[in-house]
Length: 613
Image (cartoon, rainbow, N blue to C red; front, side):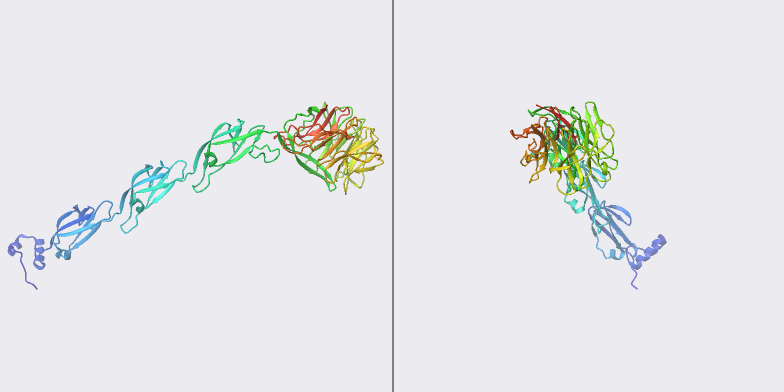
């Protein structure tokens, strides 16, 4: 055991008496182990930090102070901590302190765990409202401090959530990392998802109706604000269907109408590019023609077929022909109510007999009834569930002959029948041939001795027949249809197809004394001939003329039967004039026409009358 050393200047007996027991024990330790170490400690830190020794704050860096280790097990704990930095701590034991230099220097370098970085936040376009981590942060462009944090120096930095919001743009949320923030600037590209554009709508002429969807937004000239939208910036902008219309006018397309009789308004889908041009101008032109439907029954060897054809109609109902005057509408049938019908003028009057369709509940088997229109109004001549049609009136005005399926109501076969025009009950059958499918277009001879008609056989082309008024002595005359008697009852005008399938008008003598004569020629159709009361001319319908839309349309024509003069065009309206019938005094021609139609009356078929000059 080593020698006991005494501290210099100490008197052991005196110390024993003066010190308490604790001091005595400490003194004994010193005697055994020597004097406790004491060091001047210098503490430095980057950045400056608070210094805590053994949980007691003693100052801030740079710090200089004395530390003493009284026992071997003594450990002095030194901690430095600064705001936004991770604290650090060291433990200094008695053993280490004993051999440490004096002064004893300790240097610390702290790692950030929280940092507010200056960032210049901008958006394209500017003026967006900012929030950073859910807190309001003003409007762009703006320089602001954004705080980043992490749990420890070994952990990753958290990101800042920067949101930019601007009216008409998609809200943009961007996560900005610590390293990105250190660059000092963040730019957010905003996606435009809504744009309001004011467009000027004009037209020639003006006062056209501008519609978006089913909503009227103004009359030209007018300014309309259009809203375009999209869900994201990489998607196309919305388009808006638009309709610009003007009553009585149609869109004047640069290349002309898409179809004859086109009456469509301007329709389009307005794109953003269209709207950005700032102005949309539409040219209109007056509607002169419209498309109409003509419904009818077509009789073929395969049966009766319901048909519907498109025909141009001039919206004007007037006549500029120098050969006729006073066009007058006779019927006022609702749109679609009047079908293609044969017209017959009652001799000695201006009353007209024709057929009207009726509509059974199942709408399958179309039926017709005979009617007569007089100055007093319309009178029903038949009113039963049959097809009573294609009527004619005898020269003495007493009887009506017509085609009907009365004998074969369960089939399509039609035969000829006679009733009294006076309305007295009684029905006489004229035909019922087992080889005939349809007996059509009866016509009394002016002397009331004969009836001509057309037979549609089960096979082949239809021939023209004649028989006695009582139904006897049927005689086949020629292939053809739509026969009409001359006033002297000696000749028949009828229609027959030529070798090129055009309908031509022929004349034959019923006794066969002269060869048949073809009155018309050419690449046009000529149909529905009737004789003038003097027997000099035939009035018929032909599509040889061309109307204002460049379409061949049927007009009424007059042609001398001796061929001494060229045909004379009676109507030039440009509509579909067919089925002429002449009054017994030769003053008026009645006919079926779609003239005066409107886009709102696409099936405006009526019976008209013109006066011959």
